[in-house]
Amino acid sequence: MDSILTTTMLLDRLRNPAEQLAWVEIDQRYRPILEGLARTLGLSGADAADVAQATLSELVRSIKNGTYDRTKGRLRSWIMGIARHKVAAERRAGARGGPARGDSALAGVPAERELDSIWELEQRQHVLRCALDRLRDSARVNPTTLRAFEMVALQGASSEDAARECGITVDAVYVAKSRLTRRLQELVGEITRAYSRDE
Image (cartoon, rainbow, N blue to C red):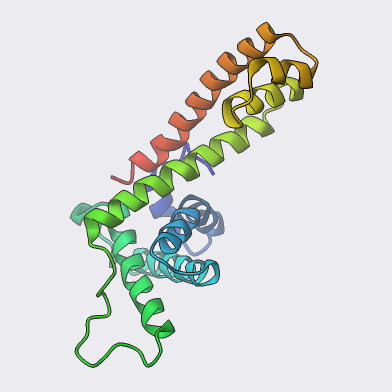
């Protein structure tokens, strides 16, 4: 995910049909959050993937045809509104016989405030996964140091156990944990800033 690109730049690029990479960036930024949101709302993995795809497709269409106007609200709210309707449609399609005439398709789909809380949680989890992936892919991180950090910080192993398994000293484990925790926090901040521009 290119966390340097502002959301405005990304949206401007989506309006240009030749800009295929803009779609990829939007997809990488929002698909995991949308799938997580849909799963939290009770959809299966396959149905959640369908909702994410349909939401992103509608988002891109609304940007290209000018339906989405950034001056009238947050991008995140726009995406959540689309997703809310897509989840309701998926539930309706999956229900036996569908809803009774006059029943709202949105019945049982949380209101915006609850969706916002779910979105926040899914976004934080996605940002952490992206930051961990970038930390693991960094050429500057020694594999042994990374393994010790993951054992202690992510898996809850003791420093002594990590030192023994990795063949390093306990002090080296403490140094690894401190240094890589700081680097992970920097990466989380960098990636989070890309999303904060969606406000």
